[in-house]
Length: 192
Picture 1: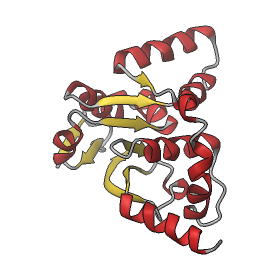
Picture 2: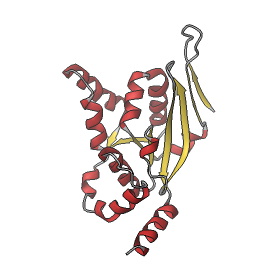
Picture 3: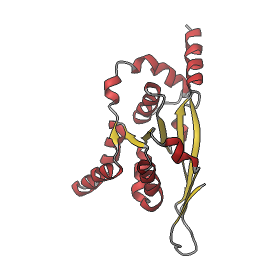
Picture 4: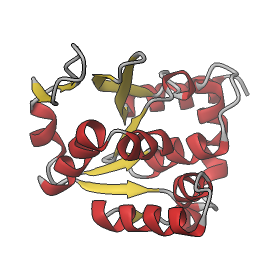
C-alpha cells in the first residue's frame, strides 16, 4: 500500500491509501482526470494533490478533456482564482485531450455507452470521459463519480481512499474492458 501520513490535527492522522503497484501500472500510460479529482487535489494538496502529482512525476501522463478543464475553471470565483487554477494545470503538466477531433466517431458508440449505463443519464463531461476510453482503450480514468460509470463496459481497476475529517472519500481507477464492450455491441445488434 502507498500511504501518505500528515501531521496530527487534534487526534486525527490524515492519510491516503492506494495500491503501491498503481505507480508502476500507470507508468508511461495516460490517465484521464475527472473534475472531482482536480477539486480534491486543490482542496487537499498534501494528500490527493501530492498523490496525483507523484503519478505524473513517475511517468504517467495526466490528461483532461476540454469539458473537465472548463468545469474546473468555472468553479473559480475571481480572475486570480482562474489564474491559480490555470497554474495548477501547468504544475501537474496536464495535457488537454482533443476529444472534439473524434466527434464524428461518437455516434457509433453513443448507443453502447447509453445502454451500458443501465438507462441512467450520464452527464456530458462524464460521457466524454467514457467516450475517450472507447476511442483510446489504453487510457485509464480516475473519478469519484462511481454511479455515473457504465460498469457494463468498464472495469474498476483500483480504489484510492482517504479521510478528509468529514468523511471517507474514494476515487476509482477505471479502464475499458474490450470484451465487455464487444459483448454490449453484440447485444445491441441482436436487438435490431
